[in-house]
Length: 205
Image 1 (spheres, rainbow, N blue to C red):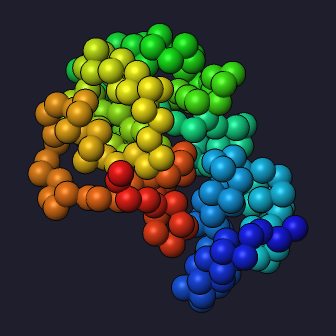
Image 2: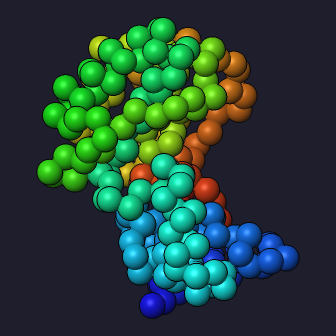
C-alpha cells in the first residue's frame, strides 16, 4: 500500500533523519495513525515495515508494546486520566469515574458514536499538578471531577477542530506542576500527539 502524497513526503523526511531506517519505526507508526484518522491498521503497520526494512511482525511487536499506538479504534477525542500514585491520592480515580459517567464511555472503550475514547494511564509527568488529564495528548492539570465533567460537555457541544493544552488548562484546569512558559497557539487535531512533522497540529480557533 501507499499513503497520501503528503504523508509519503513526511515519511521520507522522517526517514532521512536516521542513519538506519529501522530507527524511524516509532514516529512512522504515529504517521500511520494520523493517516488513518487515529487508528493503527494492519495496512499501516505493513507500510511502516516496507519503509523501515523490518518484518511486519517486528513492527507489530513495537506497536503492541506501547499503549499510545491505538490498534482497536479510537474516538475523535481520546480522554486519558492519570491514575498513578500521585494522581490517585489526589482523586484521579474519581476524575476517571466522572469522565466515564459524563461521556457514557467506560474506561478502556470507545463510544458507539465515535466521539470519545476513555482510558486510564500511568504517570504522564505532571505529579505536582495532580490529578492530570490529557485530551488527544494535550495536558490539563489539577482537574476535579466536576471540571472533568465540564470538559467533556464542552468537547461534546463545541466539537473543537484543534485541542490546545493552554486553552484546556485555562478553562478546566487547576494547580499546575510548574510554569508552562510561553503560551502555545497550536494543538492536536486528532487522537495522535501534536507533532509538526506528522502534520497533526492546528491553530487554536
